[in-house]
Length: 145
Image 1 (tube, rainbow, N blue to C red):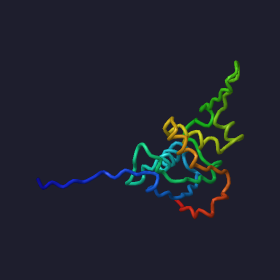
Image 2: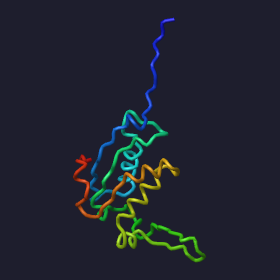
Image 3: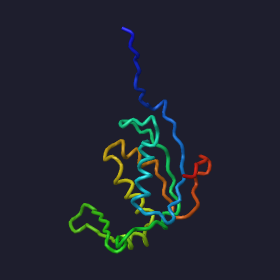
Image 4: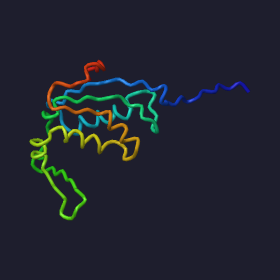
């Protein structure tokens, strides 16, 4: 039999190539921006995407304090945190969280879009969010996205 046999090539730790990207979040809608970031962190933008491997790239988000919400989400969207103690549930609106910790809005949105397991936690560690335009990752020569 003269059949062609092609093997599917899976990415492994030795063959993965990671890049660094800088994303300017100024004026971007939170959900639309964070889906792009999660896509890159998972590695779905690469032809060598493998679901069970962390083959994603590093993402640096600048100007996270200048993201925007559509509609009435700034007043109505609720973020919750629970300390584990009785009566320890705290709620914040998006406006309160934006005033207190603006980078937390982008971080929470991206974290919710990643897998909820060890793999997702490893992907989340490749995200760096900053409120200003400066970041300490110039040595990695990140590309503008």
